[in-house]
Image (cartoon, rainbow, N blue to C red):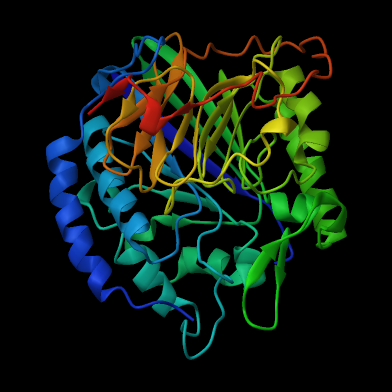
Length: 415
């Protein structure tokens, strides 16, 4: 038996696209392929996938780094729709970089309220019936901040917004659900914040229109008063939460091995997440990652493959040894961590699903076609009591101490 109620609260804030005619032809073929390949569940390494019957769990999805109008985005959208139907998904969490490359710019190209771009990149892509009436809860990423984020927020009330599913009430906002599953009452709270407001933008736009990432010491400043307001809100919500499962979601990661350099979010949030057993999910790195520090209850989930998989592991040396429970990097998923069976097809893109049972929850990592690549071990409910500090991690990974498996050299492959 499942039943749930929903409460969303927003807070005050300061508040050239590509042709895809050839891509659409390819995507039609991919949709057919998705319908044939996608399983309810697949291999998950050494972890038991205990929540494979979606009728016994409360289920939702997450995606990030998606709005690029390319084959990868369309493929992941098709898979997202299939999995949403299979698990009866209640909602999708959208963790930034919603419109590449420089966000939305109200005007003759994107439309006065961004309607043209929203139609092309969102409304006409996520068209599966299973996605048509469920909410997409949104935060912004670094590419969004190169355009007008307020326009994305205001689209929440735009008449074009199909069934009101685009929900972006403010730069930061919370979504709280109370539901019954397996005869138990469960509270789930999601705290969504703007990581670009928190630490600054990683992007530099050059005169020729190209965009490059900058290191931590050169991040572009954002609105200081909004950053202070947001952080105070986030700390208060984490410290006072009564949720059995508390997730914090932003665009930038806390820990990640991908090619984009660290942003400073770790220095602000790590201790707070550890103290209150809050899980964390993010985008920014175009890959899949599951990281857990030794001695910590916090699961760090990177789900930034919404249109492309995968970035190179250029920052492997910035995460602690023994913390990588699963990851894939390199074009098409060339390199793998976690001892999982490696699929015998290239990963174009992907997303994650989340399944909450009466006693635990698990995260499922999906390729573009819905295939399950990995499942986390069960994540237990919070004790809701302050936890002792987790020591600063050391040593950090190297190629020798955190080795990966190459797809081309693997004998551990599966369909």
